[in-house]
Image 1 (cartoon, protein in one colour):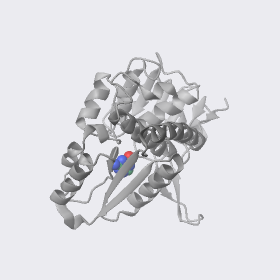
Image 2 (cartoon, rainbow, N blue to C red):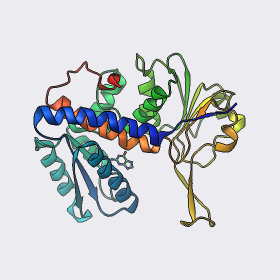
Image 3 (tube, helix red, strand yellow):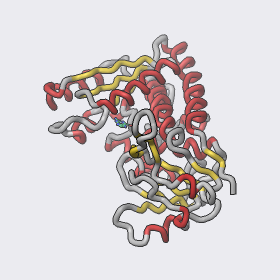
Image 4 (spheres, protein in one colour):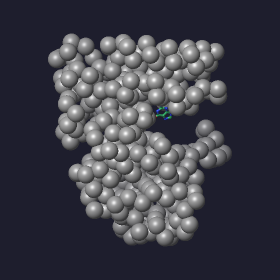
Length: 306
Ligand code: GUN
């Protein structure tokens, strides 16, 4: 079987284009741009790269962005004060505190301090609660990006058995809840496996759609999947590659060469799920702006427009 390669770069570009139209409409109507505020504490080099990608995407779609860089010496009180100031700023629609925070910061307390209406990461307990309850809310970007890839490639989720390997708060758990929701983007039967699952392959072999979010290179091997499976690889692992310029290369959690021989569709790494996360953040920012201005009621579901 020749697998369809699910192109996250191309799809993310399409999402950004669709978001830019919503942004234009919003900006004309309210005479201001949607605005995203990003807080970085310290100078983690990976965080700086991610923030650079977010800033670039904001420019592309017409969203205003500000990055606030704080020294770890501000402490919890200083960071909390900054979050409160952004909560109260009427021109700020989305707040994102870049994770991980340095040691000695209480990430949970900071996330809980963000106004849920501005919670564009979808990490606040109120946001998660609404997701689980099946209400409309801001959905976490990476899981929602995975669903968006499936929808845009015409891969039906209704009635399908989706097996997710990985139970993180950022990917596995929210994705399971998104796919369990009623409607076009959900209606799946979901199994969540993890590092303590007995006989993991027994589950992965039953998957119509297999999502790997483990963080172990080449963890999913060809004998763990059935013919025709759709494979979504969320892993981004650096492995040593002395022959390359950087000395390393990025691989996913799936043995791509072998598994792609059996799959009907598969995401590459890089260029699969990764680019979707920032695109969905753009969508959440314009959705937050529209909701705050009263353009969207609680029953509107912006993604259905796409
Ligand atoms: N660090 C790595 N990815 C993310 C993300 O999606 N959101 C936040 N806030 N921090 C991150």
